[in-house]
Image (cartoon, rainbow, N blue to C red):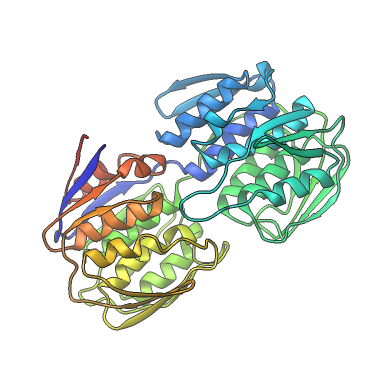
Length: 417
């Protein structure tokens, strides 16, 4: 099994180009199932989850072709309504095929995705919403079975602003008869990106990016050619690395508007952040100030940046509090950071951090995608050598992260297992 070895203590300097957003690419690729003909997507990141999505779409009968960062998908040949456990277990986002399958084939049989390292992530709101659109829902032998002769628009209130739930119901509603209103909808940029693609396909959607979305169903959609938006979490990870190592990094191909909460917190920590149209420059300060953080749905501070920002606070001056309100098990990385000398105490969903002068290199174990990124950041600032094991998680969400850090001056390498 691969591991990443880092010799810490080097300030990172230079430019880094951000890849396409995994969390935007996955639903957008899946939306191809709603069309006949070839859709073309560029700036698609080369990640394990993208490969899993291509396999899933192929298994449903869609045509899939790849050429570098460009992927073409034709949903016209879709004939299989079942997404098997062997495919869905690899990636929770596979549940997003549920809405398109019911909308196009009138039925779907999709394996329940189960839990994951950072929490249960239930899909009850997906199923409740589909039922309100007229689908009959049954749970049998670990599968969701949904069917509907005709989906019908309805008013749906989401108890929490679930991102994948909003996306699944959007894709079902665009081909439903009548008008659907999604209340308490997720507002994340990835949701807006999907809505923009669906609108380009011919869907009638208003309110994307707000808590109330209105969708007027249409009879059919047409294929499109679009570019995937940049990954705000990858951008944020490199931004934190600049502040953490007292470096100077310019983020290229970024979307500053998607990162306002993080930019605000970095400035409070003492980093200098300069924002231009599609670039963000972060210059670290010699002394890092403690900053409290509470994760919230967008536009609040993203839960996917909590672990990375915690590393910054581990070497900050003073005491900080990080509250995690999105996932119940998202402090798994804390025990590994403590192995590196961090002073962190956990009480429920709150981490209390007292900054230390330096972290120490150590062998650590990655448990999930963002925890993996946080341990790499810790290794970059630690004194001595760190080994991050089980880094296959990284390949789900970061494209060539060790090469990008090496280009910024880090002493980092991947050792093949």
